[in-house]
Length: 95
Image (cartoon, rainbow, N blue to C red; front, top):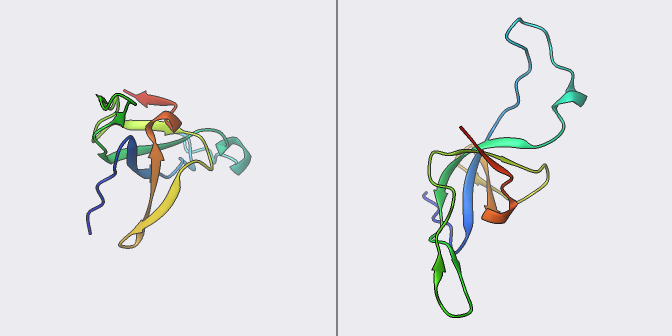
């Protein structure tokens, strides 16, 4: 099944937070709080203004992004959970 977001919505595959540091130390659960990361799978065409103009999306497929915990709607594709967010819920694009 393929999901094509509409308007200014974005389909994101969450990235699981790291459980160990590069040196092999375990990261405690409470330090994993804060923004989540994910990879953009697909994007809608953009937001439509009252005049009917489309404002193009800033994010694109393949971008790694940060988004707040608890944002968006969860959807299941196969056996993996994904999120559908509005573009304005995305905090940053990670290079």
